[in-house]
Length: 230
Image (cartoon, rainbow, N blue to C red; front, side):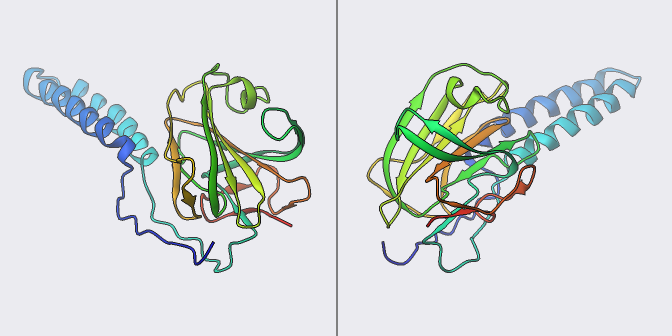
């Protein structure tokens, strides 16, 4: 595969949130100005500023795009967390859609307060990309992995191992963005995509992979090693 490419990403706010943040700020500022100028009692103004200012701060935090580079030089066997969040599933499952065999599934749930940019979990070449419409069950439910709307990306590592990374919509998240393109090379440190407003990412690994995380553990996308390939 050659030396890993590290692309400098200088943006601090993710491009998926630019329009949302700009129009939300304009709307909040306009309403606040009306309340300040046309209502003598300032309680409605300050109540609005506090409530919607807090909501705006949460949304701003949600769309953060941190600059990250995995600190390990040798990433050939590493599987890193594709998202910030919490480990909610570590189990062996029968994967019927692509591999038709038993696989090790590790799932990360992203709350509203997590960064929602997604990273590639391994270095490799993108073999397959597919978006599947579906339901919007709560993302932490077991049936969400197969029944919810999701986007699948299969990556072939330099050693020829196929890894499935699945972005899953939740009860609130209704938009999945995937940047992966079939036939392109991908690397740890690069963005795989983005999920708006809370959801989950599943990674399907070979059954003999070494698990490096535990249930309930917090993960940092592109930094936390969740498994090692044999």
